Image (cartoon, rainbow over all chains, first blue to last red; front, side, top):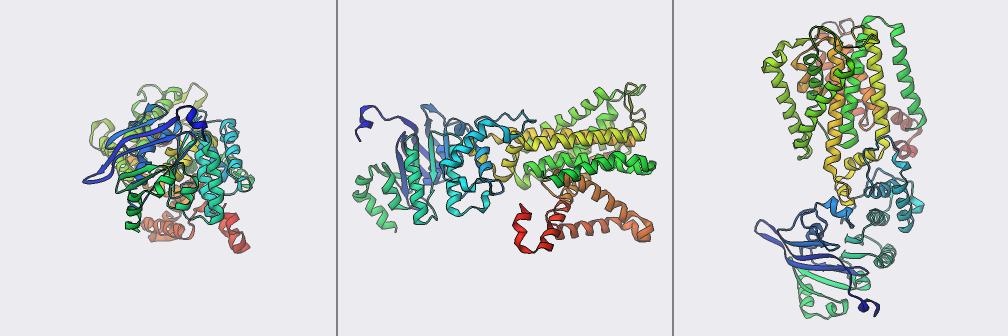
Length: 255
Length: 327
């Protein structure tokens, strides 16, 4: 793995000193995080540690109280979520946020439409939009949902819904993926399939992974950040994190 | 839309086109009124059924279209439809743009209340100022014309003109719903959070739908004013906003046919319960009968009249095809 050292790592998303206060409560305290292309950066921590708040701020769901977010070298702190999404930032949610009444294909097609919206072409059938249909065909195949292409997304199994969620994310052709517990509620086989997919996506994306499944995290992550009560207590390679005494106390103390 | 549904819609429009041949003046006037309500209902369907925005002040746009038709008409000569109609639609759409720009910053029940508040403001402007002739309303003495081609003073001409407007609005909305714009509105209805995460700025979409909807409601208002030759503040009252909501719920939300069927069902139910021949002295309490029948239909037809054939099929075929019918 000396290829990466030959040139400087390409940082696609950077959170700089991000702080978020809700009234008197400090949900995030001076958090720094960097996502580089070709890596999976896992964020772990107990419930309420601020992992989801971090994802929400990075994706632009709400602004930070303090600090800065940079996407592809641009300061996007004041950008709304849709604009960040169009600039190459995709995210999935902890709870499924698919369109249950639409077909699997249409779920992906609609997401793909975001990059070429053309709402004024009101006479043209969306199904004949080559741009979005082409991308949708690709991501449906890539996420292994071809067999379920035409059924309502609401009828998919839980694992398939999680796959669809990622597929919809990919349909927006992002460079950065923020994934909020993509493995939650999955069986062993589904977990394996999802990890294989993430492994493949990692090659051309920067991925932030929030996950409770520690085995999975240590299998796939290149870098692990540990959060406790809104602060980062350690950020290092998986091996170093595993042997970090501070992390062990924080984890063993809380569990 | 599958084949049987297209046949249904074509049959309805064909029947409407042939209706004046077999009907007298009363029938023509009555069906004209229903078609105007159907256009009005379609405009609200675009918001409630397609975009998922429940507007409880839609009568304001209807009323503004109607008042504009009267106030913009010259008193000496009949006005030309070619500019009067776009002016009425434009006025209603302009008010909708303002109302939408402000009210779309709220969500859910707050949105419902804010749209109601804006409608009440419009209501009191025409009710309490000399502009709209107060509670008495104002008359439109000279009906608009289009050269010597169309004279809306003739009942049958107005009927045909209204039918053409209805068909145009229906067709345009059917096309629009399948377009990228329509799909984006549907996405906003089902899951706005996901739409934003995908990169859609949802506010301009909702505002465009709101403005368009207000404009179509204004078209309905224009036709209504021309039909009656008279406008009064009741055209902007919340009763009418409620009635048009009931029409689309009764017909079946999320279907253009629903708005069409709902407008007819509502008007016919109203006529039925008002009929002294059937209900005798009770006819003067027609609101009660209408209300009860609407409650019954909401309980028994959760998907509106549009869902009735599916419900019957599911009942006949038993449970095994229920999912298929639902899809």
